[in-house]
Length: 319
Image (cartoon, rainbow, N blue to C red; front, side, top):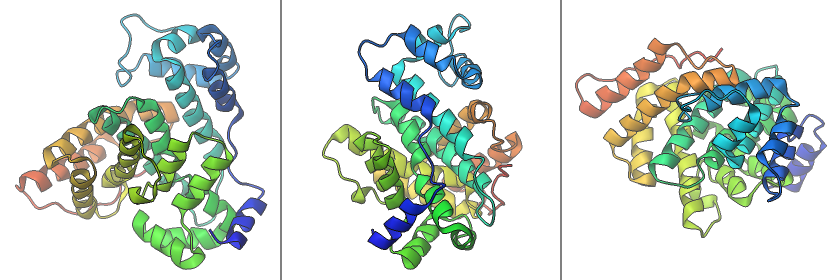
């Protein structure tokens, strides 16, 4: 990255900061002596997160429980330390950063795609049997963190460029490179490093558009990076203005990166659709009306089975 560009970013007073609650939870989860009760006491300081956590613990997406989960300690025991740390990070990050913005940059669409991508990443991780699904969920959410950094550091100039990309992430990356000789993947990886996040998360962000740019020799980490890279393309089926093109790209990359055939993509898409209500509730964001979400699934089925040509449609409203 150009040193002058990096310095401009460092000088920005409104860069995203790692939220205090998940940082504390992350530190406790790395401590072998930390108990579920102690973690629960820390989490209980944030009533809004407690409410979300209990909803997640009882949700079908996370497997639910035979008996209703009513206490934080029970939720921590049921979901596990890693899941709790990840959920705390995701919730706090979204809550703290969604208030930023203004001007030409579309924060609503940004978060819409990030949340769908994090959901897709978790589902892909389960499909390819990567152990830590929650870490991949977080990586999916963080993969475009550099977009937020650039929107803050470059202001309206970046907002105009974001609009010019017309919700196409690869066009956006090309425009970023043309203007600043860097892109949101590289900048997002830099911020993840300044936050001292695990290396695999940093590399997943770096390789979210081009997995070849990520550095790893571990097979599990390699699969995680591929899941994250594919997750954004799956999210684009609901977020890109040209649905037919987005579906074709998702199918092509699914085969290329993870050897998932079109029928497998359809299964993944159905799982994403099933998880959307829980994600909408957890993040308090409208990810689309049921009929709008179903329409994308119908287009995917048509593209696979060739019964009716798919048609482009407007991306699902994310307001």
